[in-house]
Length: 381
Image (cartoon, rainbow, N blue to C red; front, side, top):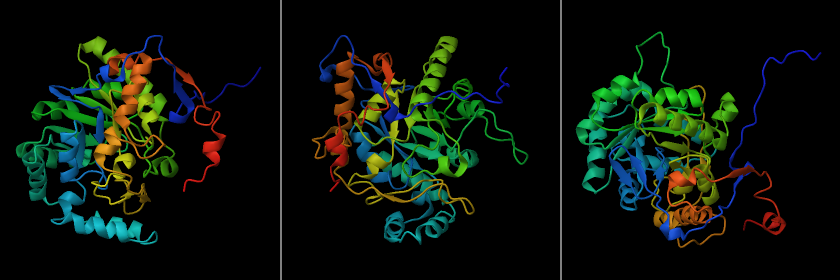
């Protein structure tokens, strides 16, 4: 008799290991409704720019809003630590590989200026943008009231891993049910990757959940801590929690798959796996309007003893509008993302993202390599 196992592992899947099966009925892509609803707010595209200093500043937040999506301004980044953040961003992009880690630690060690919190939010609002800001759990009680007073539309509370139950010796902790009652705006919380954590978060009354731990191009959490779940499996598990919570409460809480996207096909797979929207970092950091000027870095980087992020060079491939809507100038699927989503929904016969959730998926590790020997051997230059 074989000895019992201490642990049994289940297989988890990432974007490159699965494929979407075409539907038995097809529709014209322009018939697909790709809108996203977060409580009383509706956005025409299901794409959110991540709360990273190389991705979102005031100008990009305004532009992203005008294009129908959302961009999240990080209230603990350079935008609220420095009166002239562009100078700091330029310094980060100029630093050598050996200089960058100590430089980022120095940059993010400066205190947050509370007056800049309101100023940045008001700049976005004056520019006609929907304003979404992000805070970490440790600073939520301090910064959330300032943000709501300044007129923020949505508050995101983000950390590497977020749960509804947190034990701490030093403070009472952040209780999301109390936060939801105390603030007059929708609250999105993340990140999580499991059914149980997602369900518990939704039960606190929040308006959305971000899904993903460690998949981002500039994130090294998986290498440094060994923590994470591949995005397709994480999305499927959290989508199950969303649907069970809706049956339990009658309330629909959208899930937002956050991180690990490289091309339009990944967005389509995330939606088929159950996501209501996606949060993008490195892809949008390639926009000419992005504040990172062709670079991207993780927001967990500044830890004084254990940096969990790295600066990467992503280059500038086109305008934000071109990346979202085309016309595409590349063949790798990193532009005209909405066109890709609409086309995939058309092929699957899905009029809405909710119908796209019902698309069949298969395990297909050869989906990106089958018959692609010429493409794989072609020089990237």
